[in-house]
Length: 311
Image 1 (cartoon, rainbow, N blue to C red):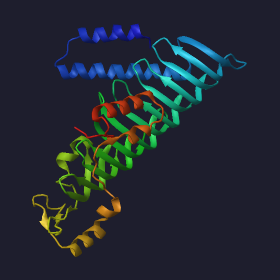
Image 2 (image 1 turned 135 degrees about the horizontal axis):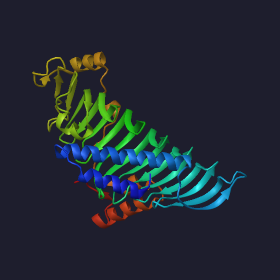
Image 3 (image 1 turned 90 degrees about the vertical axis):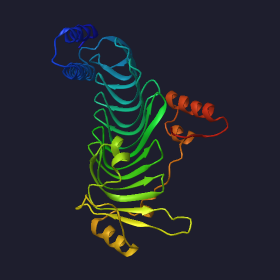
Image 4 (image 1 turned 135 degrees about the vertical axis):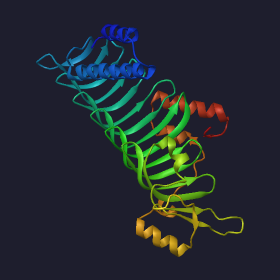
């Protein structure tokens, strides 16, 4: 789907009449997603490709071996090809600013690879399948180089799925189960305010977790950090009685609840307070230019310090 045709269709959408702004935005977004899907499908299949190729070919005159393709939309791919499709190790820079370095299969990102997003955006390193993060990986979420969170754990079809560890920008952490990109199941929430909660949450968006973590959807235990006298307070949340507040319990009662509901213990989860991103976080992404830019920002923002405290 060529750029001019997309622009003409977008102009028609803008000129059309809608009952409200929400409908207009929805139609616009759906069309852009559709156009992007068709464009990617054509490019990955080798059909409808417009650009300049320099490299090896096979007897059928298909791209095969090592080569560089500069597409008319601004994308540039250099790496291995097989029968006209990206296959093996390569590097892709898109016209929109995305940068991927890793393995491809049948034209799609597949296997080990790293990707960064433009304008101080996010960074991901891990495994891929059919063009999406799939398996284990680490994602540092950023918006214009402002840290918004970090996830390390399992993915499925581009979404957080399985076991994973999330670090919030304020220093709180969550370590536990995820489903379809949301916190869903048992886990351990560690707050910088001085307590941990081992509990069960259901379908909680990660951006809402800091607001909702004190009211679990299932049974939960709040482990308060020792006070100045060394005393430890343990509280219980009855998932079947959400109208009740946290109730003090003994260590023996806590152990029974943990065993009955298979809740994680703070020491088992090894939750550690998050004190900020370090150069080591970005060195994980190797020689990606975007990672080097983040490291340089760390050095400039703190002088001789190696830490960037989250906002």
